[in-house]
Length: 317
Ligand SMILES: Cc1cc2nc3c(=O)[nH]c(=O)nc-3n(C[C@H](O)[C@H](O)[C@H](O)COP(=O)(O)OP(=O)(O)OC[C@H]3O[C@@H](n4cnc5c(N)ncnc54)[C@H](O)[C@@H]3O)c2cc1C
Image 1 (cartoon, rainbow, N blue to C red):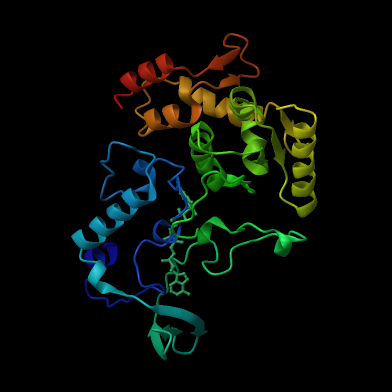
Image 2 (image 1 turned 60 degrees about the horizontal axis):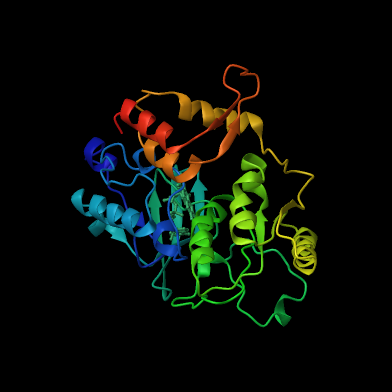
């Protein structure tokens, strides 16, 4: 869009290795997949996100990408099934030579003066999978969410989510839905280590308190996960349901007070006009206690429905 508008005398090619537009938002198909930042800032500046929900699910983001690409005439310019396999720079001609595998049958070479790589930040074919000794002897399915099996029936199955980061955060609401379902039987949860460095242990309280299931926040090295599983088993054997911390070398019970302070301050600041705040407040912060170190005038803060209503109204969200 910018190239067509600002450099109309230049030719360009858009190469896409897969047969579809959308990248991340087309690849991942696990339940609950959504953005974890608000779409008003993640979306394109030249095509504002206008949907009601600012934290959007993958199908809505994919629709938005299709709509934008077709509106600006980009879709027809994309050369699908063109996988870049090699790039070489030649200073004498000041050109890149790009080797491309087309339809997995033919190899092409293209030259250009400027190369813009938008290939994302993770491997589409070989995502990080830690080695779990004995994995091959486990009788149930084990898979990375990047390769969620179509039509997987996980109802009634004891399930463990191993991981950290955005995917784990988005899976948690799905876990809540699973826990609320009368048909399902889960024995316990391994909580995501990295997310917990910020949020601490308290957000998992509902699993132990309301659902009577053990939760052990664990690191992601094989021995961490093994110990996390052992701690869950011990709780089950002793008839306990608590939130325990296996990843004590990194995770503190209260999380990271500075990061939480920044989040809570943001939530307290009314009338900022920050877009998407309402969704963030409702979906992420609601009903959680936050400490504000160094703010004796405020103490701890509960982001409740009224705070959301006031902040949203003030910010006209
Ligand atoms: C579950 C999940 C949630 C996320 N949520 C957010 C969020 O809320 N906010 C945020 O900022 N980020 C989020 N991200 C990160 C997200 O991936 C990026 O923000 C965004 O999708 C990246 O877009 P992109 O076009 O740079 O890369 P991608 O979406 O990864 O697209 C890369 C494209 O390049 C193609 N490609 C790769 N290699 C080649 C090659 N050799 N030849 C040809 N084509 C190739 C791929 O097929 C793909 O279509 C999330 C990621 C995941 C997995």
